[in-house]
Image (cartoon, rainbow over all chains, first blue to last red; front, side, top):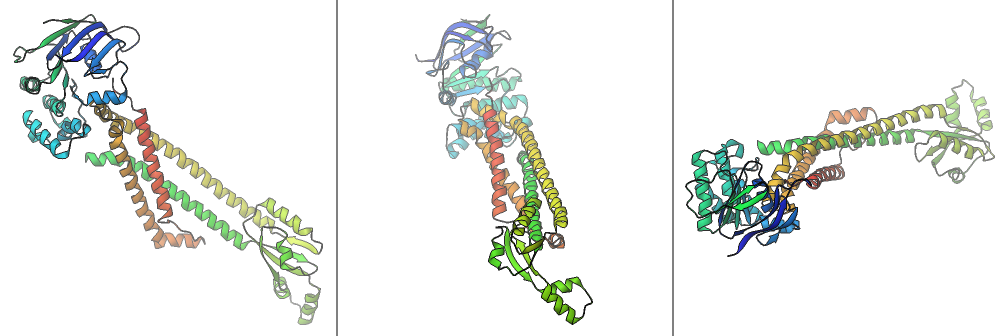
Length: 223
Length: 270
């Protein structure tokens, strides 16, 4: 099976002092559903950041979607990011844009035509049950609704990999379930690789998943 | 509403800058016109024992633009005497030759001194009246005007720099988040900054047309024209082609510079 992520002796740190992730080795199969858990400050989000190239490896090697991220050029990194869907804990929606335009963003960046873009956005708005909010701006929505918009944006361009950082961290049960259903759907129906950083793995998962746990800068496969 | 808010801050800053530049141009033109009036009204008088032909006089200095002989009648009239006709005729015969010379430009006191010295070298010329005292006062007044304009120009530069710097801070705050988010989804540099450049160009266009409309109105306003007429200054308040190109060019340059500074100074979110 193809590997979408390969980490060898990977070390990550924000400064020159202490490594947050220290010489870890792991790989993630294409099309798999992966949970990364760990205590607060263990380095889960740091590891996720490195997967979309926001933090370069200090030592070792990290290959995502065939792109080595330690010495990646800006254009190659942009190319990789165009094939990744990211869901952030703080949503990262463009405040001055409408919900519709926020969801369109990856499609615009990937150069999709107007008709395809509109069709895809309409379908996603239906999936996240926000059709009636399409013309509103992010700050007019609740936290749960904003996260559903961020989810729709991450799915809009049918990425090969979805990275989600605590996607249901502050959400109500309804929004949380909707998010998990969407992630499961993308994984089972579109064969998209999903990597979720979370404190708790939901009990009612309907897909087979792999679980990594981070502790003291090391990563362990739990199952 | 959000869209208007996005535009208004830069438009206001650009409007202030363009307005100041056009006012500076008008003041500069007024001074140039005033100086031309002074040049037209200023002349020197040469007294010579014998006739001098015009070419000789013109050859004294390239500053001299024209020479005309003053008739004895006009000189006697200036004397305003109560002499009888016979005496006047005798006086006419004994009078030296008087010439009025006009200059190309309004000279400085040093230029007047040099010119007087050069003219006096001619053997038959006995006196040059340069009206130096009056000239010096007017010249100093002109220098004062020029100084005020220079201070005004420096003030415009400082205010412009402050306004642009303030806008830079606001824009950096406003646009960096969107640019970072676009970057996280792989948008290339040109696409990330496209919104910024489009906004900059639209704002430059809007502010240029607003200033265009204002000064076009002022340049045809009878009250404004009368104020200039009252002080004998006849200038083009707003040249709809040349001045507009200058203002639009300035607005585009400043807004694009601002956008470029933001793009260059933008740091990717880690």
